[in-house]
Length: 625
Image 1 (spheres, rainbow, N blue to C red):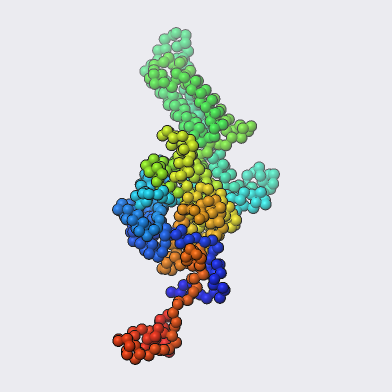
Image 2: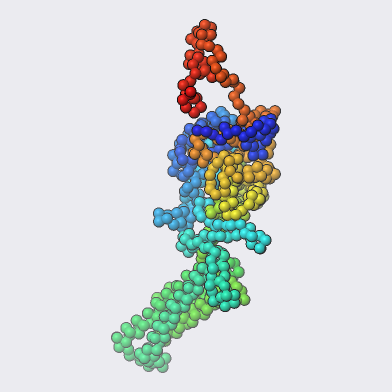
């Protein structure tokens, strides 16, 4: 196979520092690391192979929990011994495919659904990963990289800022149904042909994904109100029907005057059935109202909840005494007139509550949003994901103190949840806030808890994932700006190159990731530099899988690593030729060596001074003339 380093690039001055494929930012060999193959439990074999190539940093990991569970615990201790012997360092990457910190995982049918049990299982898996990382590096705080999400999220395109659009303009929004926990709605830009718009402009109106989501929530709420109103109408008809029955009217009239009612058995059964039916329908309607109120209270903002609380207090007061178990047991034993009055009173209370509940959201002066049953998946997931990360971080800190492995949350590429840098930063800081809450419950002070949170919760910044925003129209300066935004939170770095369209995992310098600018921004933020111990892991599995060769020489070239402390760089030496002469002919005849060297050099190629020329080219294998 022909490698690109054999393609002649001309003859610039080779002692110049920028010679070769140098990207413009120097990293010493000691700070160049790479990840091990995650599809095998034989991480010791992989570590040995990588360290033999010259790498000084490795990242142990597994593609899923099953493979991680197949690594014996003794292997983590052995990796620790191996890194000590070679003067290397090791970090850990948590499983990728089956870890979703929010608890929103795919099911057998192909859909994704939130489950608190799923979240708790993932949390336990991550705690186990933390323990294994400490076993591998008991003397230092090991970065443990965990993906921020493993599910689709909002997609953004670059907006036209000059037209007043946001830089991150929504293109596609993924929503979760908070009632069912299912992630099954995708909202996109869409033209709406509503009569009001057509009447005023003659053109349809373009609705953004967020506005489409609002329409869906409004429609869901209106349908719920109409459904309950229809149910209440049926209940009213039943109440009115039995109240106007001659037998019931006459019986109530005699009851009020003290006359004997003298109902036949059939009349008693008939009246009892009518009252019971009205009571059942009324109970069902009340149950539907309570469920509707619950949905409204769960998924509304704090201002709306205050109004709902007033309604709840009024509802409870008006029905006081009519909802108790004793009342329900004795209801049938009440006089007939009392039963009908109670049913009518409950019906009136329900009418009043339903009107007020609808008015809370329909009041044009308040402009309140309908209950947010459908919610952007990032907004739903952030609380649960942050809870998981915080609990795992607390487990790490509480158990290992200053040697606690770091929960290092990794940014994902566009199309996945939290791919927007601002959303990702919010996730990290929310996790820290929850850690502080947990620590304070254990007796920590606010300041100490905040320091601990920043110690054990940080960011793994993957510039290759970030670069995939290019396909959505984002520019190089947008990417570097994101690195500056997260700079102070970064504890671990993943370098990989691509062209912005797929997660290619090429070696640095082989794509269009502005690695130099990213690294300069990280140095300015204090993440990198002479005194930095931040690990830099190059994820270059795509290159290795395709070309079956070590990427280490290319990386030495790309980073212009020093050959020795005093100067001279690998990017200068990479194009140098060998230090021996190639002989065009048999300069030293075989008899010379037979006379003075015993057996001679009969097996040595002619170009190295041997007796016979090779029949085939040693370079291509072609027949020599």
